[in-house]
Image 1: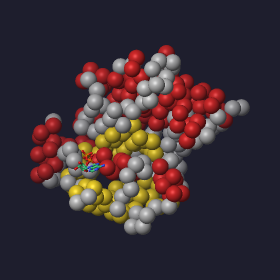
Image 2 (image 1 turned 45 degrees about the vertical axis):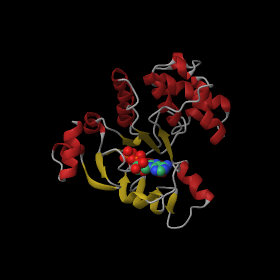
Image 3 (image 1 turned 90 degrees about the vertical axis):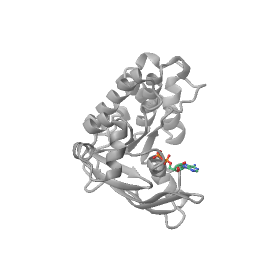
Image 4 (image 1 turned 120 degrees about the vertical axis):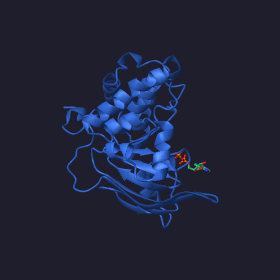
Length: 267
Ligand code: ADP
């Protein structure tokens, strides 16, 4: 039996549920760029299998939150705690081991897919597992092929990114994140760089991942999508979460005037 057939190692399935308590706990997160404090104390939790959407005006700190979760930015203060990876308290500089432990819990899908232009689709997908996670090449390729098939791109295996549509490129970006078998998937406005007619095919994949039980944090302006898929919506404003709640209630009936003004502008 190859490792891929061992129960629990199916690359198409999210990591097994079953832990008590939240998968991710963020407390008091702060971050400044120079004199500009962009996170002013952010607290939230994400349970396994939950989809949390981050909405709010441009510049309110949503992307910075994702980047801190993925280790791309180091917060100035606060705590990020992943179940089974312990907590990192950023009131003191994180150790290298803490940084690696944090980075490996999640995988990020960017606004622009960030595929390597000189690598084929399959090479793009196996690059992370083989080089960062030391997965044997043959196994990584087998998993990558199954994931590409899963999003309808099996026939694009040997294509280069420039030969794909924007929607196809973004679906490869999603497969590349799934191939890392993370506990948590992070999406930074995954459809905002796409032509309108290509948005739907990417949202369909996200919805399917949600239905399969993947845990996801998604920065998005697609409020209809958030209403349908999110378990919780966090409304960011000027570096804090001003309001949070179940999507139907928050989007239909916001408590704060600023949330109302934001929703009026984009709905
Ligand atoms: P959002 O995702 O809500 O649009 P961001 O987290 O991208 O907001 O940005 C929040 C603020 O932080 C903005 O004012 C932005 O200009 C600033 N910012 C983000 N990244 C950097 C950086 N690397 N250097 C300096 N300022 C940054």
